[in-house]
Length: 322
Image (cartoon, rainbow, N blue to C red; front, side, top):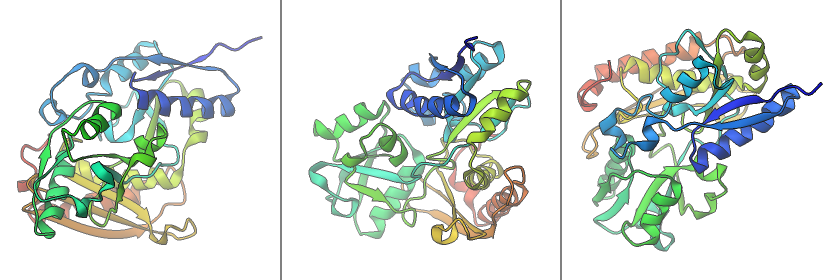
């Protein structure tokens, strides 16, 4: 007897469809069941306001979660950086697959790197986090840039450079990788200079908490190292009481990039969008051996946030998301 297809809820953008398609194939392999994509429009997709104005947190997520709870879909795929840090009790974060490249990528005219951009270059990004760190980087080089707020899909953003309206744009490398356009990046920005958004490059696979059988099957896609890293990053974000549109960067990585290594480093940054002031700190802790043991990375995030707040981070974030 043919099993009915699992319904995977996804946003309609090219990137969302690409990453959901990758997860769908993985779910087919672990469950043996067909998976169909159900396209859902979210508030963040239809609003033309800048993300910093509409709050960022949850604007790409709420409609998918509503569809889950109503039974319209069986599970959903989100970009983890879009998820609010508080997890609803009636939804299970069943899997966080292996993370893509968490770095930011520069796409600039004439193949330029960031340090080759001329003084006064116009750089497009919708992210206050990127604005803060890019402006600080330019200041350290004795130059200035003009950060221009932009929205739109990857094609639209790259188009600003192709049409000569902007000198460069900054996008997530993970998104470019997932749609096969990473070759257009003129530079991958080192986290030593620009820390990514908490959870950047990772996906979240979510289902109803009551569907324990499906949650258990989806959990086979989970990567415990990625889960530990993003738990630390999101714990820092939550402890700063900041939403995903705040100028907060964070990255947890395994020391030396070796999975045999048991130590994880967490770096965090908060800054003013003009780059005049940054609070940047780091800490290290042990990597948990089980996907269910996230107490250590969660504690790392909270403790680093407390140190950053003590250094004045709260005053750099504008309105904090309570």
